[in-house]
Amino acid sequence: MEDHLSQTFAALADPTRRAMLARLSKGEASVTDLARPFLKEMSLPAVTKHLKVLEKAGLITKTKEAQWRPCKLNGMPLKDIANWMEQYRVFWEESFDRLDAYLKSIQTKRSAKGKKHVRKK
Amino acid sequence: MEDHLSQTFAALADPTRRAMLARLSKGEASVTDLARPFLKEMSLPAVTKHLKVLEKAGLITKTKEAQWRPCKLNGMPLKDIANWMEQYRVFWEESFDRLDAYLKSIQTKRSAKGKKHVRKK
DNA sequence: TTTATATTTAACTTATTGGTTAATTAACCA
DNA sequence: TGGTTAATTAACCAATAAGTTAAATATAAA
Image 1 (cartoon, rainbow over the protein chains, first blue to last red):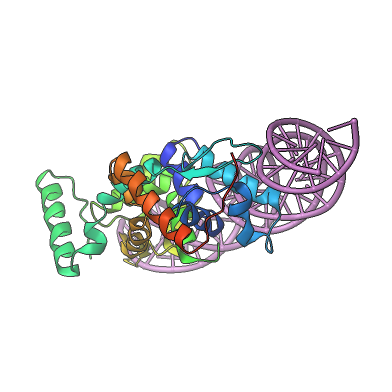
Image 2: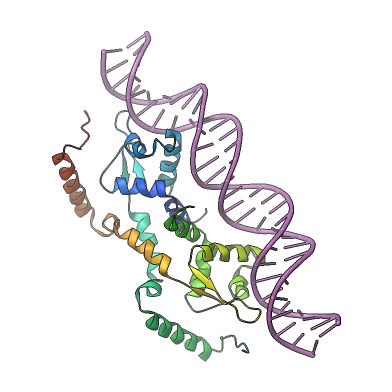
């Protein structure tokens, strides 16, 4: 998982971890706080592991307060994802006609440069 | 990988697959077209597998044209991700002061409902 | 100093991922 | 028909992910 973006996407590819982020978006929470909704489904060490994945991806920061480890959400890695997504916005936001026109305009440019691969029908 | 959103995030958590999407954002491409930039690093079956992951996540669609399988990008799953991201926008886009104020306002609401966990310092 | 609470680490298991090579299928072409 | 190109499938392997239980660590409190 060399690159930053892959690491962030991978961290988000788990419903438990996304639920933890959702909880943290309401404010700081300790490990036990975060674990509570999941203790019927998994053990505390499993929760620790999920938090470690989020931490390594930079999505949360753990601090110390007595024997507790309050966690807070850090949105920066999400900004990287949002930036990456921008280049695809046209593929979901515009009407299909516009998307089609957009693709055609690109194809034309490529043809003009002689790059288009011609294929007999 | 039960849920849709997890499947999409997981599909995006690989630089090869993201590069393939980037290529497809310039227009349709066959499997060989998509494979070309990676054939020094991996075999064709590996490429097929990556495409299968993208296809199962709904990010691409494969069609048939003679012995080729032209692939096209489908942005819909990205819209789901963009929607999910919206709830976190405040965590990267606003100034830290505003974020702090936002969190405080939420904390206050929770205190008012008697939900806030009080902890001695 | 013992005990309780909060959290992590260690060691292990199982399933999934990402890759390989070799063989197979499918369509076209001479 | 036989050969070539495009792509997939099968069988396998190594590394990683996600979980487990049991033990260890750290702080606070009695």
